[in-house]
Image: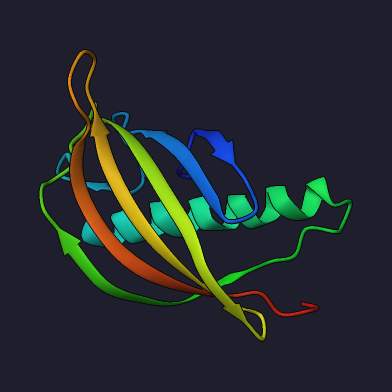
Length: 129
């Protein structure tokens, strides 16, 4: 299940992705992005960041698993037709577990992005799957 559309920026410790909430998007319910959808978009952005970093190093891209979502605040709903910017920042890595902070914004032409949600993720990437 791929829910982000574009990896806009990626570095070792941060990434930005875009997602267009088109009609029928799997994370929409009654035209509104589900709360779990916010977390899934952040997790997919984190996974894409890690995969991009490994590919740049010539390493095989490993699978990762969302281990936890914490302290998510939902400030406003994302709706069908919205373009979202998802930002993740790696804050720590220990024993295959990555800790990240995430923020999701609604993009509108000619306006400042609107912060929709923030939270923390723990992603586990075992050495081999």
